[in-house]
Image (tube, rainbow, N blue to C red; front, side, top):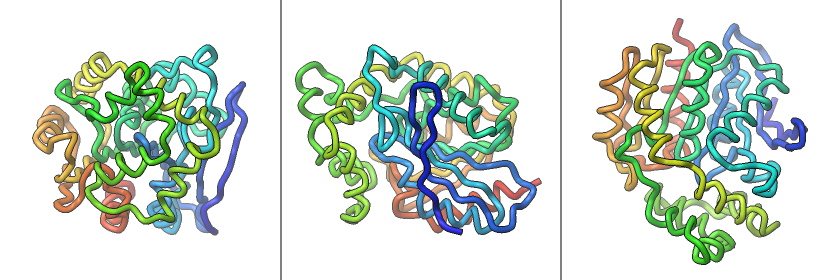
Length: 280
């Protein structure tokens, strides 16, 4: 099989997602991949086939307000962590997924951690790639600017913001074929920029990071942290401190990777994830 591009109506919201189901399913729960800002489900497209080839059903949605998923008006969707968590729960119910392994990355991927702490009984295993884990974490300055009045309205309507964030965070040139996927929603509709603006304004970083820091210290499910050491926004030291607070964790350093490690180091990440996810 190959990666499928799918859409599903869940209540009033349409979710876009990538998935690949294995030709020979193994006795593993599905794996859900959640992206950060401004990356999309596409960022997992090199990893999904690797997992499917080993018997895993792999699913990667575009968050509501992002990519090819619905971009509701702020009057209809609050763009808060609580709103994203509620929408994600409904998405999983629509796909009839009860228990799964979760892989998160980045700002907004952090909402996936908040979901996990609210529903620990549904999480088989947890993998974390360069996601804010500490009350020390702050939005990168450019993302902060995108949430400001007037300036943010202008910045989030510029498709080149994708280039600046992805290449600034990864410290590598992102190929045009990938940038075209990430820029596409901003070229297609101004709603993409407005949804990004509302997401950045409503991430509630101080309270969200306090919740995540507390949640990690009491987390018991098997966890793997894969960390791009060269991340310009989230220091390695904070990630290691978070790992030390956890009971059942393994820490993998990716020495040449930065904030979006799945973009350029998919082979290493796939290998590490498979070893972790197949463990009994």
